[in-house]
Length: 215
Image (cartoon, rainbow, N blue to C red):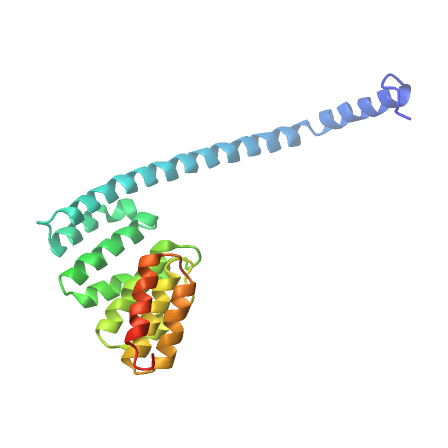
């Protein structure tokens, strides 16, 4: 049965509650002030983070413009990134900028710089559900295969990717083919086909399968 809110026992409990509040008023006020302070601190840092991301995005746009400028060289792009470093560091735009540097370095045959940037991305970014990490893995794989550094390439391509898994399998198939491990190459290409619905990619894998000596 519900208690009558006007009963004496209810009044006694209510009086006790108000007495407790009066007795602990200072502590309660301090707790409320602390909570309010923490809330405003949270808002302050939230605004700071938003401002940092806005500045990072603007700096990244300038880097993209430099990258897309046909007259821009690797040196120009590096200078642009150096000037934007304070704005983009420790953000996703730093990783994206490193990818652009690696691409420009590769195009200008500066493979050491390209590999350095790609290794940095792979080792410093989250490898779970991160397309930028996976792009770096694939691009580094291409470079290592081009250098015929197959052991390092296989190590780099050793883990399954959340993105570009068919491409990873294709590269492993290419390595196996270069090493004349044609049965392994066949397996990798077939797995690559199963991992995608891209008809153009499937046709390419079928062509590679048809060119294997064991086919």
